[in-house]
Amino acid sequence: MKNFHFLFAAWVAVWAVFFVYELSVASRLSRLRAEMDSLKRQLKE
Amino acid sequence: MSTARAAAIVLGKELRLEFRARELLTTTIVFALVIVVLFSFAFDPTAGESRRYGPGLLWIAFLFAGSLMLNPSFAREQSNSTLDALRMAPVSPFAILLGKMLANLIFLCLAEAILVPVFAVLYNISLTSVVAPLALVFVLGTLGLVITGTVFSAVAAHARMRELLLPLLLLPILAPLLIAAVETTASLFAENPALDRAWLAFLAGFDIVFLTASWLLSDFLLEE
Amino acid sequence: MKSRVPITVAAAALVFFAGYAALFIAPDERTMHEIQRIFYFHLGSWAAMFTALTIAFIANIAWLVTRQPRWDWLGVSSVEVGVAACTAGLITGVLWGKPAWGIWWTWDPRLTTCFILWILYISYLILRGLIEEPQRRATLSAIFGIFAFLDAPLVYASNRLWVGQHPSPVIMGGKDSGLDPAMGRVLLVAVVTMTVMMLIVLVDRYRLERLRHELDELRLAAESGSSSPKPLAAKELL
Image 1 (tube, each protein chain N blue to C red):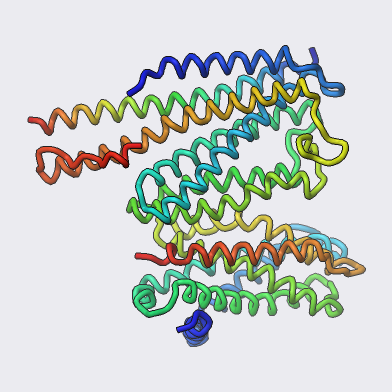
Image 2: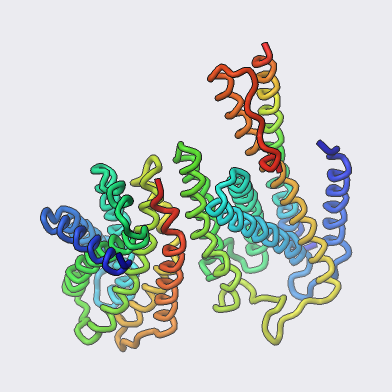
């Protein structure tokens, strides 16, 4: 199969871009939610 | 007060201000001149090479000189709070913008009128046969530059690092303009000059589109 | 919040099916053979990008007109996602160009205008980072975003108006253009899949932006000493 490594690299690149970005957003989201919860608990006191 | 009249008043103010001290104009001209001189180190300045590279390099010089000149022109308003005074006047924001655009256009065109002949002399190109169409190309191209540049200098005025930010925002947006300007200028620099009408139309189209966008967004641009 | 499991499962299924279709269902191309299959991911990226940037354009206008914060949140989210999609498109393009043309890059109209578009929207994100005050940041970046979008039709039309290294359009192109129907079906699957993936990330990014805003409001309430923060109006919670 000619050029298969380029095809594979392209497929990896597309999903790498997607997953890296989605993971960074998701982790920031959960960190902010944790901060939000702790702040809410602080305010209740 | 009509937009045209208000713009004319703003334009008059800008011109009077600048010609009292002439610091912006002289600095811009000398800066562009330095770049023109530096070209001679970048390529072999025979007439043939100059005809080929001249248009591109000239336009890059004016793009850089122009984008560096636009910041001080807006910053001047901020340091004296004259912008607030202008805003309170019963004129449309677009009139203020238009006045500034026209002032910047005049300054840059003056710089070009001095520098293009200097370039022609230093690099042994005869441009006397194409003065009129060349002037048209430079006015249309510079118009696109100042329309977009004046709007973006208002945007960058409220940001940090505005000296670096303005060229960063401006130059990519102006890329189509740069290409069109270089193509039309190159068509006039050639051995057998013939103005490229398609690219000229593109240049004019660019100016119209960006002037319209500026007009539509002018209210939001100059608000508090 | 609704369970995310059904959406995640459906998205994963779409991704697997699209990949399978691109690699095995789509017919072999006459001249380029296997490497041509990048086409499905390449166009998929662009479809996702143009969708994201159009959403950004609409959000920018909506902010200037309504001044509701959610449009600013949508604006920055869709630009970020659009830049990611553009990156994927540029990478797949380069990885296709080298085996197909022998060169990594060339400055033909399509590639040049697209590269400029990429830089423009990165500049949008840089601009936002350099303006402190939220209202002003939203307004000025919206204005810049509207100007930046003026390059997008140019990118789309660039291989119709000019002939360059990049292939002329195969869909709605000239006389000799056209796509094999089997390829067309796989292309549709790929475009839908990648646009859906883009929308999934967009929703999360939007939630992130909204949460940041709520957190700032909460912090302000905590500092001012009130016992509970002013709740966000229901319509802002979209």
